[in-house]
Image (tube, rainbow, N blue to C red; front, side):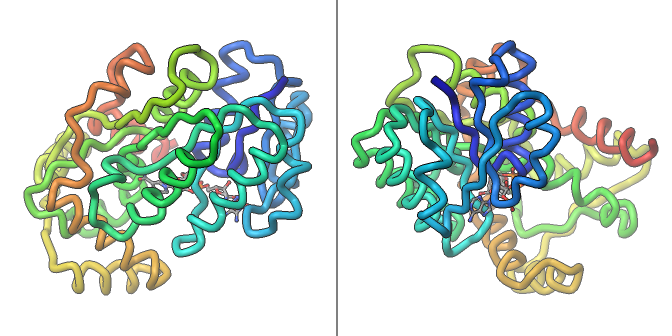
Amino acid sequence: MSTVITGASGHLGRLVVDQLLAAGTPSARIVATGRDVGTLTDLAQQGVTVRRADFADPTTLEDAFAGADAMLLVSTTTVGERFENARNAIDAAVRAGVSRIVYTSLVNASTARMTLADEHRRTEDYLRESGSAFVVLRNGWYLENYTDQLPMITQYHALLGSGQDGLVSAAGRSDLAAAAVAVLTQDGHLGATYELGGTPFTLTELAATISDVLGTPIAYRDMSVADYTATLTAAGLPPQMAAAVADADAGLARGELFTASEDLVKLIGRPATTAYEAFQHAVTVEQS
Ligand SMILES: NC(=O)c1ccc[n+]([C@@H]2O[C@H](COP(=O)([O-])OP(=O)(O)OC[C@H]3O[C@@H](n4cnc5c(N)ncnc54)[C@H](OP(=O)(O)O)[C@@H]3O)[C@@H](O)[C@H]2O)c1
């Protein structure tokens, strides 16, 4: 029997496939799916089964999931269509006989009021009622959401946001992938909902961390949600995405991206990557 990893053409799904292979899962027991299988060619060359799966096109899904006993369902990027996408994938997985579905949700999805939480909450509810055995991985805000801003941070000597003094338990994608590998490869996780976060920090503390790494002062500049949305849009983010990111920062200010849970460290069996380490790595990559 095999394990399907959806979104394998994306950052998180790809890390999960790579870590499954590194942990010794035979490539023949991994099915990697994406909308464009051309992006998965190198995995096919390693013996991984590669199949097309577009959650917006249910006709592609049952064949894509056939023969699998477990599935990592990576939430899609299409905000506003994510619930329908996930519902199509869950229905197809159940029809295909997949017996365990692991879903990547968002930290505090059941209580957070930010817009992004809504489709995750609906998907979790649908999965729980699907009859399938499940695990919910409520992934924390990515550290990469901040390291990806490095060029802008160095250009303006500032980190921008609307998070006020809220704490964010951000975590690196690689650690979140390792948590997914743990629940896919170990017994004892079925029915669990894990809140996965790293060491919490405020955005003012993050700016100080970035200052330490760069050796130059970086300030945190807090803005209204409207101003932050406009700034992100002017920087090139699609308007809907800019609004969602700024709205998430308003949620951060309300504590919705904070968790005191130790679930991530317990699942991966080592300390989570810190913001300092993530920025050190990002600077090294930028300089290479
Ligand atoms: N916690 C956070 O801070 C945070 C931040 C950003 C995103 N997220 C969520 O976490 C997910 C994984 O993150 P990531 O960094 O791996 O994102 P990513 O690199 O953008 O990858 C997203 C994956 O979703 C796939 N996808 C999008 N629409 C799809 C559809 N209709 N049917 C099937 N697959 C579809 C993409 O496939 P294609 O290659 O075909 O586009 C891609 O493989 C995201 O999709 C998003 O839901 C979380």
